[in-house]
Each structure stands twice: as C-alpha cells, then as structure tokens.
Image 1 (cartoon, chains in turn red, blue):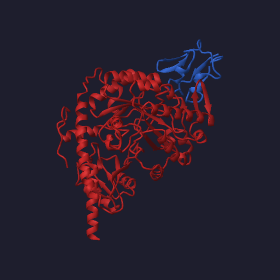
Image 2 (cartoon, helix red, strand yellow):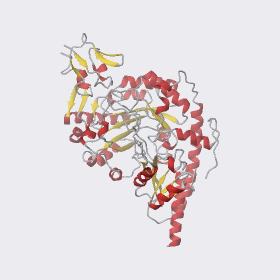
Image 3 (cartoon, chains in turn orange, brown):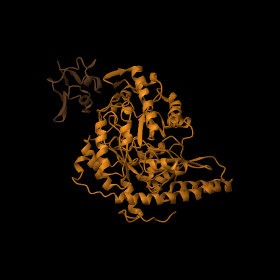
Length: 488
Length: 64
C-alpha cells in the first residue's frame, strides 16, 4: 500500500481527515461514466472527463458534482415523471426540495465550492428541461462561470429544444451534454411520451414521438460535430423498450455518443407517475445486466449512475443537499479556488500511484486460470476500501479474472425511505442485495454481522482496509487461486 | 374571453409564462396568474391557448 501522500495546500492534514472530508462528499449526478482511463482515449477527451464523476467511473471515486434546479419548465410529458412530487428523503431524478432563481443557484454553487474541494461539475438536470427553459439555464451558467471558471458546466435534456441552442452551448464552453433517448421507434415512443409541445402546438402519439426522435438525432449529430461529449441516457422499461435497446446503443455509438447510460425505470404508485399508477414495473438487476451485456464491450456503457436527485450535492451516491438549502447559505462566500486546485493536484498523484499499484497486482493474476469472481466493496471514495461494513449504504460490485478487474455495478444496501428497519432486517436485505457475490471487502465489520454473513455464504474480509480497490481485489483473487491450487 | 390558472393544481414550472404570446402570465405572490385584460385565449395567434397546450397538469389552465 502506498504511503500517505502530501495534501499540499488542501486544508486537511492527514489521510484520516481527507477520509472524513470524503465521507461528507457525494455525487448526486443523474449519470456517471466510462471505466476507461487515460490509456483508453485521446488526451483531449481524457482532459474533459478526468474530473467529471458522471463521465468517468474512475473520476467518480474522487470528484463531486452538484445539481441546481433552476429550470422547472418542460416541453414534453414522460410517463415515468410526475413533477408535482417532492420528498426530501427520495433519491431519484426529477425530485427536488426547492427551486432556485439563477442568482440563488449561483450563490449556492459558490457556497458548496467553498466547502467541498472535490466539487468539479455543476449540472442542470431537471425537474424540467434545461434546454427548453434555456434562459434560466443560461443565466445560471453565466453567473457561475464568471465566479468559478474552474467548475465544469453540464446539462441534461430530452433533446426537443436542443438544436436551437447548440451554438450557444459551444460558445459557453459546455463540454458535456446528456440527452435522454429511450427508443428509436415512434410506436414505442408513443407508449412513453403521451405528448410533446413543439413550435406552439401540442402533439400526441406517434406524431409526437416522431418529432421528438427527429430532434434528438439532430441534437446528437450537431453536438458531436462540434466536439461536445454527449452521454445518452435511456430508461429501461420492461415490456416497452428493452427489445430496441441494443439497436439504440449501436446507433448512438455510431453517431458519436461518448457514453450510454441504461438506467432502470423507477416506478412506484406513491410517486404518482403514469407508469407508477398503471403498475408498470422497473427491471430487476438481472434484467438490466442482461441488456447491458447485450450492448457489448461495456467500455461505452455507464454503470456507476446513481440516478440522483435534481438538486443533489456531493460525491456520487451521497447527497449533502440538505446542508446547503437556501436558508443555510451565507450571504457572502469567500472562495479563492485554492483548496480545489490543491485537491486536484493530490488526485493526480494519487491516481498515478493507484494505477502503478494495480499494474503490479495485475501481473500476479495474469497467469491464473480460474473462473471470474464477483467481489463487493465498501468505499467512501478515493478508490480505496475505507468504509465500515455497517456504514455502507451501497456496495460497489467488481468482477475479476486473469484479464483484470472490471467495475460491474453498484447495489444499494438501503432502500430509499427506509425507516423502522431493525439491524437484523437490514442484514437480511444486504444478504439479498448481494445475491451471487461471495466476498465483501470493507474497512471493518463486527463479529456478529460477520458470522451472519458467513452463515449466508458471504465472506466479509476487513484485512485490506485502506488498500486500493483494484489492488486488493487482484491480490485476493491471486491468493485465493493459489490456495485452491494447493488444496486441489 | 380569458383563461385562468387553477393554483391548487399548478406546479409553478413557469412554462406558460414564456409561451404566452401576450405576456398575460405573471408570477405574483408565489403563484402564476393570468391577467384577463391581456389574455386573448391565443385567438388568431395559435390553434389552441399556449398555456393549456404546454401545461403538464390536466385541467389547470382553463377558461375563466
């Protein structure tokens, strides 16, 4: 394991304190990114994604994002959306606790930037459509860019209004745009979008879906042609659009989308959405994985998306939004950007170290001839195994074999809106969540839960606390298979 | 001849405000309202009132 690295000008003196800082952080972006590192892409692209937690799986261990909900108006209706809904305990796209004016939003971004050195991205992603409610989106970005030139701007849209603003987006140096495209088939689209509003008229059914698709493809082409990185989000709706997902993946990749994020439909009658009320279910983890596997190499699939709230703040998978509500914002915020610069320097060194360690460990497994193994990891950021089993609200799932370690997905340990579950019930839930995963790596675990997990056939290991995730998994796999060879 | 907004249903998304060709929609005291003196129900301008066409909640922008 590497020695503790100097944190430079960052005002945290030790790894422990940084760990604490990371514990508070968390990304709530609605989508995350490719596994690929600098070796897999050209330097210009890597420069754009290396600090964007949603566009790079690797970056999401280090960097935080925030969303501000300034653009509530939308030009289409989706059957999975109900914009009248708000719950402070809900974590899913489209949900917010307060809407902000561009001025309030800029003040909030400044306050978060001063508190959270991991902050690298500001996104506008609903509720509503950032490209349709363009004046408010643009006003917010203009204010933030003036005060925080080192924060990246990104936005999400259904694409319908996007072609009208592509040139402004390029002029504003917005490098990242997410388009939500759920189908290439207007007949399927008609089952997802009851109506759209376009050029002064409400359109329904197949006609609406045809116009929307046409504009989405136009937006994708225009953005790619201008060098903007485009992520395509697709909501996987069983029985409605899963049959076309592979073709959609092929087409958007061919058109130059950087990343494709296939997300499970979140559906519950309590959300008041059309799909929730009609009993349309979301996909199981296995169904989602099957569709992702069909979409091939995986390099261009985003699998670390946490489907975050539209006002989330922090590292992906965490939300500090409640710390930065309007009433808690200071009137005047002092921010000189030094902490963020120091943090980024530290990340650059840490990354190099992590890569070197993983490469060394990789050499050990290259000769192993054994089936692949799934491993769950408890981490609170920094790419290390540094979270107590009992504190984990999600597990990151990796697959390892002789070819190396691959991030597969994350699985939540708590169901949102938990409340009232005893420990025993939570453990049963974790055991269900980890179905098919024989090993968990964490920083610490108590004896009682360790024994209950073992009784369920899941081994929990806390001897590699603070190690890099990849290195620990590769070491485990190598030693496990040496041991198997010896006992065989 | 004017439309009104049923405040109890309104999500305050503001889409009607910038679609209204007559600037009849205003945000007042925490709610969107239509000024009946300015509202023309979009007669002669569009096939249907723009506020009702873009509103995400049924029966929220309705004839006054």
